[in-house]
Amino acid sequence: MHFPNDENGDVLRRMEASGFDFSVPHDVEFFAVFRTEAEADTVARQFVADRTGGDPVVAIETQPAERGGMELMVVKSMVVTYENVSAFEQRLAQRVSQHDGYMDGWGVLQE
Image (cartoon, rainbow, N blue to C red; front, side, top):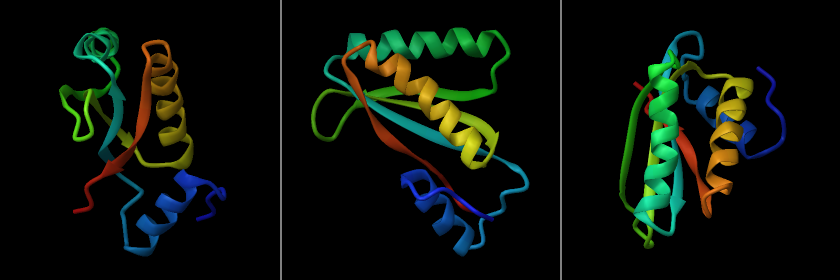
């Protein structure tokens, strides 16, 4: 496969090199960090609303972040493609930026 020369492309190339199966859906974890629990909860509630609207969000969790603040993890089931990961990451980033947070990456467990 060909992936763009950016951070997501680099991650996907490493996944491909390790034999990752891109042909089936996986649970992809996306992370963001906020100064306060209230900010994290506000964005979490937006994704809960999406889930009740039929979006295949598997899990939404908040917990204290290692470096302070609150971490939000949104797990979405998807076929892992550059386009799918980037589109969801952008959607999360838009919501995060409205609540004084920052993106903290994404990942998927390889089986």
